[in-house]
Image (cartoon, rainbow, N blue to C red; front, top):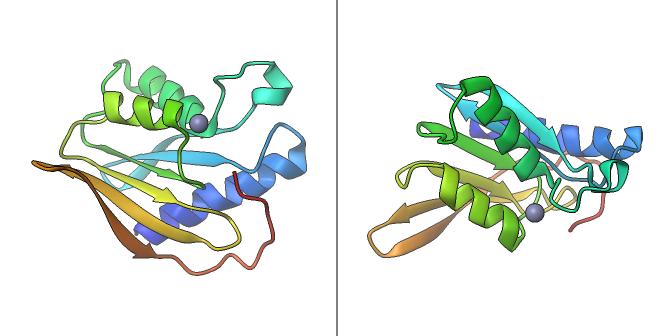
Length: 137
Ligand SMILES: [Zn+2]
């Protein structure tokens, strides 16, 4: 199932570029096995330097759920988050929740992050290549 969510994030990232809204970055927030919110990079189209994919997905998920905490949710992103997005992910998802990250569209190489007693641990997640060419962050 994680592969399907990651594939959705990657496809949204490609579509974001085609539409001209922003860079090749998208994210989906998943709760109880289904996508509840999605976001894509719209920095250039909104002149908002904080409108990265992960942040827009987190904003949308919080708006839909009516809360600032995303306990029980997972996030899947099309690239490795920048420090701003990583901070937002750390702050809005419960410590036991998984944060799943793909490191690029072309490589479609993904990992999951899980926070345990000794900090964040990266686990590789095999995602089939989308076959689409795209830039990385
Ligand atoms: Zn970011």
